[in-house]
Amino acid sequence: EPRKIGRAAFCPEHPNERATMWCTDCEVLCCRCCAESKHSNHSIQFPNVAATRARDEIQTALVDLKRVDDSLSQHYKEVLLRQRHVSVAERAAGDALTAITERVATAVREREAALRAEIDRHTTAWLAGLQQEAEHMSRCLA
Image (cartoon, rainbow, N blue to C red; front, side):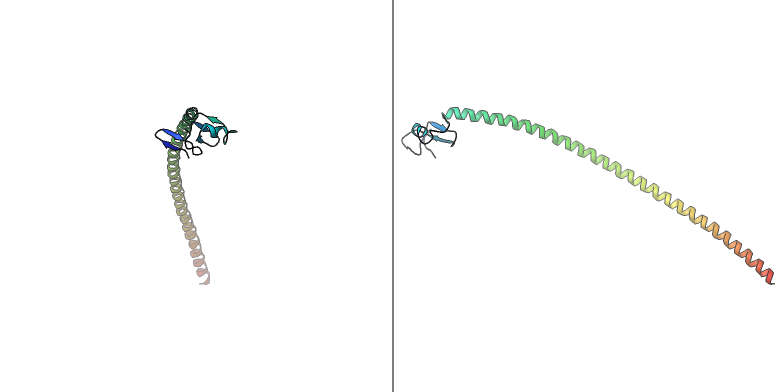
């Protein structure tokens, strides 16, 4: 880690040398001596060039993030709209199901009443027939 005196950074390997180079591979400030030895096979830049490049990359990333944010916001709005449509459709389906259930229940009650009336008519007719037959047998036995 370079030590700083005022705004100047000094090389950690050579404390009397200003860290005037940026090793992009190691992402450290170093002096010219380290750049030519320890970092000789690395990509070396002046710090202001590296800072400009980093700033440009950050700005590009921010533009991309803004585009993604806008897209996500639009998708979120669409999801909310669809959620509202689903809720409306769900309520309508529930209301329709309730109405159908009520109509079926009414039809079942009406059919039950009709069947009971039919049973009552048949029972009354059958009992009347039994009554006549009993009277006929009574006359025959008398």
